[in-house]
Amino acid sequence: MRNYNFIILILVFTVLFDSCNTKKQEPKNNGSRTIISPYFGQKPPGLIPEVFAPGIVSINGRNESGISFSPDLDEIYFTVNKKDGETAIYFSKRKGNKWTPTKRANFTNGKKNEELYPFVGLNDKRIYFTALDSIFSDEKIWYVDRLEDSWSDAIQLDSPLNDDLVFYINQAKNGDLFYTNISKRKMYYARNRNGEFPEVQEVELEFGHHGFISPSQEYLLVYTQNKENEKRKDHDIYVCFKEKDGTWTKPIRLGNEVNSNFNEGCPSITPDGKYLFFSRSNDEDGLSNLYWVSTEIIEKLRPQ
Image (cartoon, one colour):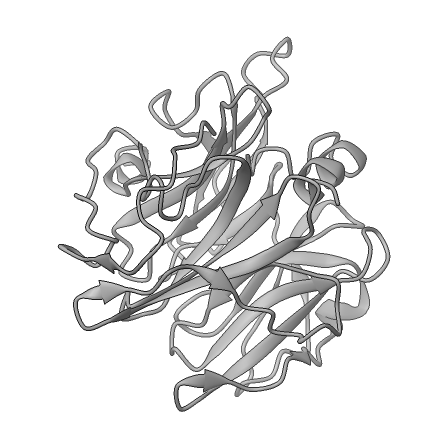
């Protein structure tokens, strides 16, 4: 159908979704993947980002973005946008010493045309995601609850955060929800009140969207158009650290190892806080792969 990320990027922030786009690898295996580590047998990276699971998760001819792992690192959910196709959530589960082939989740069972940006709650009981019928009309946050080895029917979250057009939701360990308000082009959060989210507040940042909160809320990752060089049109990832008084530092650009001359975006952190995942659109067609790198690259930027 169309690249949802690209359209939103153009219309909302001039580039709201474009950074969720990399050169692809050919599929290596259509069956289950034998594991050596919790990450599809991939050797964990150091301070240099690497393509994640090439040919398994990052596949030629499509965009992947917004990946989320279950707390036990035995399930993954991520956004896929195929050429001339709808945007959907795909997933894989680790069973024994193998990962199952990735397949479409279809949480809303056809109630909504598209689903994207999943986030597995850190208590492993719920998956939050964005669902919509058409862009700029009904982007809302939905969720499914775990039922044994399956998921419940999808439910639209009953919270004031859905009073507007919203997406890219994620959650801290204490249950607070962070998300991007598309209409206002800003980051917001909703405090966890015994499993409900009755109030929303703006996250006071100098700039940035598609924010992802670290599990402990020590820092918040965002992305936006490069701010260091006005001539550049590509998007980069920045980090804001939380001060002792609860305010956020000025966004600090991640180094050149993460930010290239292509678009980087859609950052996420694994539940154990060890790895940063993001999208990079360095394919000739602007398609994106998922990259990962040690979060030590973030810690090196923390103000002393």
